[in-house]
Image 1: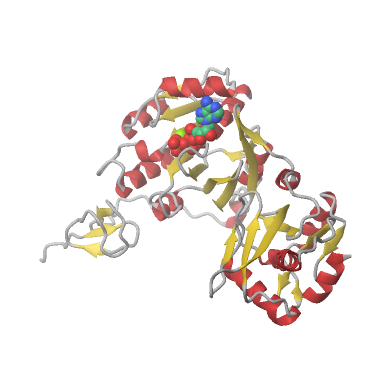
Image 2: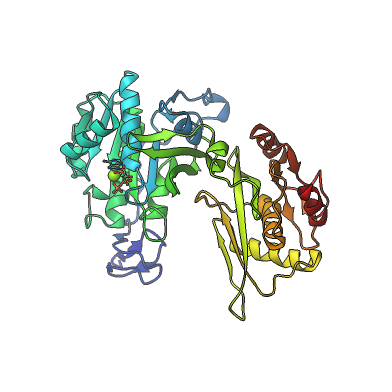
Length: 428
Ligand SMILES: Nc1ncnc2c1ncn2[C@@H]1O[C@H](COP(=O)(O)OP(=O)(O)OP(=O)(O)O)[C@@H](O)[C@H]1O
Ligand SMILES: [Mg+2]
């Protein structure tokens, strides 16, 4: 009988090699090789798996636990779910530990059991942060990086929520910090949380590419992935995956001395510094999940010293902006040939939303002709190559937000047919 072939498999991309390598030659991941499971023998003594039918499954709404923060609950789709595992990723210093400490304090105040596993910081550092945030609740801390010790410790307490800050600091099988190790730690913690019905929140570091280290391997295991991102003085909490709610939802916070403060009305917050009566400033209504937010699109046009003029866009899809510029040139006869054009979504936000095309078009037009538009205009619509204004998703929702934020001169596909009409209306 031939000896069974042992091979090693990259857990990121599935590439097989006879010997484990430090780095996968196929996808470039480090420490990602694990021994392939040897062939599985089905023994006759194995208890057969149970089968249920859909009608026997209890589908009553799972119970949600409020985070004590409306903005956080919104992103989760209504609050924390017992037994669910959640991954929160974000750049160093963005405020992950701050947000989770605030959450822990809120749950404690609501009479829930919370354990904070601090692999990254000493209890003293956590205490200093708690003091700064005004957290007085007596939180249970665990300073431990060995996974087995963490799990053994957790078995001795009764917790509703366990926060692990961060998953990369936990040591399990394999090289510490390697993909295999992080994946194993995640899988074992998640299995434990599901068994016990405990909500688990894992903090994950973000790589240079902007994803949580070991993106696929961890994200497959958890029920939801949230990212905390910087947008100027604001922090956005965004859902990238959610088995219990919609993706793309955002919660808006502001970093203050006392921690992250909720911003319940982002449209007003993001427009607070909008200049009045200045050319090149137009309000568009962007869509984040099921929420419409009014944002200012700014444009500036300046004579170019270069033979090929510059096109710079920040916070917006650069290719979409290029298309809008070409349409303005061809359909409105706007001369952009010797102008550098800068387009910016004010407030440090980033969005890829075709519905902002019309606002971009109007902002650039206004900047080039040097005339301010009607300040009460808000524009929504995709701009087609023929210069036509096309519909955008959730148009009604956006229009409602426009009116609510005080922009009663709404311009969309129902109000104007093409950019020519849009310009005429916006100038009134
Ligand atoms: N004394 C302070 N006063 C005001 N703000 C502070 C103070 N100390 C820290 N901060 C703010 O808190 C932020 C750090 O937040 P936090 O430690 O929660 O980030 P993190 O995402 O957990 O970072 P890491 O990935 O390094 O763990 C800092 O960037 C700063 O904005
Ligand atoms: Mg931290």
